[in-house]
Length: 235
Ligand code: GLP
Image (cartoon, rainbow, N blue to C red; front, side, top):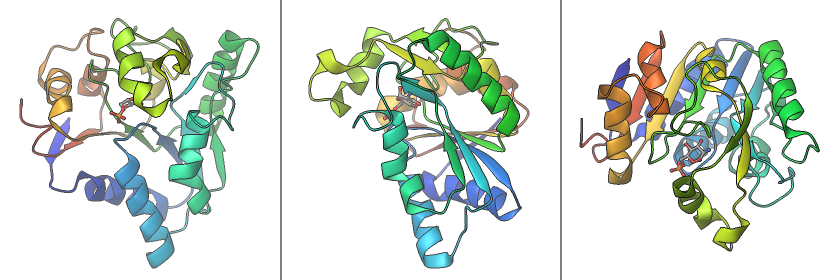
């Protein structure tokens, strides 16, 4: 595992993605949440100002709330359109079907789809305060596949800022599993701010453990953790 401490983590991550996108047809794994937003802004800038083209790129999203359709303001499908994909010339973006009547079946077919459009060349990741990646909460099996998960109250509270009311935060999600995520050729986790310092320390220096799902980066062949000084402060 490589740990990079940078003043502008978004530039380091944007460089990794740019290299992959320039090298030919690629599949990107996209994350939502606030952590990758600065990187997406930088990629849009490179597309607009420097002609970086995503025409040969397909993307798969990590996760989605059960019960929210792609046009719901808090759905991750909409988040990624608003923060990245509507502003670039990307070929295709796939996400789990949050509105499916059968979320378990939707999760299984999304896992199959990733197998077909993958392998993912770079999987972008944020990290939750409790060490979750995607929506793989602590105790998630290290080899898990895409499936329905129940959110912890901490994660519901953390994500409530995106909703008008905490009661609106869904209880269930469809998330790529830790095993699914681990099939990407490269994992690139970005974290900023002191609020992520404990989770980053547990992921990088703690035991490989289902109690800290992000610790799976330790056994991946090509994993990069990109942090600012504050997020690195407990390393
Ligand atoms: C959500 C997402 C994760 C993200 C995490 C951290 O739970 N499912 O993919 O990493 O939030 O979010 P933020 O980057 O906003 O702190």
